[in-house]
Each structure stands twice: as structure tokens, then as C-alpha cells.
Image 1: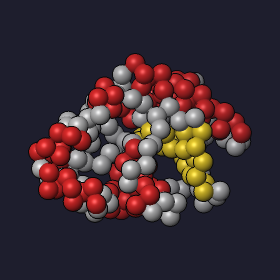
Image 2: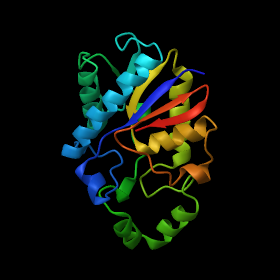
Image 3: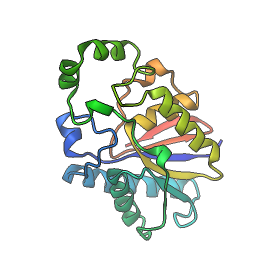
Image 4: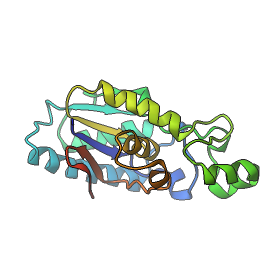
Length: 197
């Protein structure tokens, strides 16, 4: 199995306020920028440990701005040019549709019946205009199948959960509410999944 060094983007103001971001382009806040630099330092140590030259490993990010900002800050730590990575639409965050910008309490107030259904079946029920985790799982599985070498990926909490399920490391039930840390590096590889923070 190829190794993926997976980093969730740093914190945004909407993260701090508990607002669902989905595909909205919310920039990193100050803590998020600090977390991104920290993740870059962890990544530098992991790449050295694993015998990777940072200049020769593939880097890819979600096209959303918070992921690109995180990637730029990490690449700065690695002393790499800011433009030397790919963007892949399949790594964008799960779409929350009409719930984007809402807190969970606000989403529940807007549509308590749908909210209750989604709480029971989070992997297969989507907010109006949004995506299911099952759909996100399919697109990240396609991304993973196209990988040809060890890769550094910067994306989102939702895509991390979906990738864990796609690779058989978690079940939909165990992944649906799993907290994905910011400022950390998740390593998917031969030994399963490891977290470095």
C-alpha cells in the first residue's frame, strides 16, 4: 500500500464557532496558521524518518482556500516553492447544502425531521442540496485508486473520514462522528493508520 501523509486544514473562524463549512471558502484564522506550521514540522520529521526527499514526493490539496493556505504554510516549513503541488476536486469537503454556515443547533431548528434522520444514518442521509458521506467515500476512493506514489495530501475532516472507510480502516458508524485533529499528520500505510500530533 502506498503511504499517504494526510493533513486536515488548520482552524478557521467557522470551525471555532462550530459552523458547518462544507464547500464555503473560509480562510484560516491565526490558530489555523499556527497549526499548519506545526503540521509542516511534524511532516518534515516523518518524511526524513521514511527516507523521503520533500522535493521528490507528490503533494496534492483540496481546491478550497483553507486547504491551499495550509499547504502553502507547510511547504514553507519544508522550504519548498508554494506552487509545486496539484489540486484535486475529489478532495474537497463534504457539501452540507442548505446547512452550510449553520451550527448543528441551527441546522436542527431549520429541519428537525431531516436532522434526526441524519443523526441515525449519517453516512447515507444528506442535508438538502448536500452530499452523503457515501458519495464522498466514492470520490476519495477514486482519488486513492489513481495514486501512483507516496503522497502528501491536505484536505478536510469529512474527506479524512471517508478515506478511512474507503480503505477499510473504519466503519461508517465509527467514522461518522470521529474527530479529525488539526495541526496533525495522519499516516495511512502498510501498518494501517497512525496519528502524529
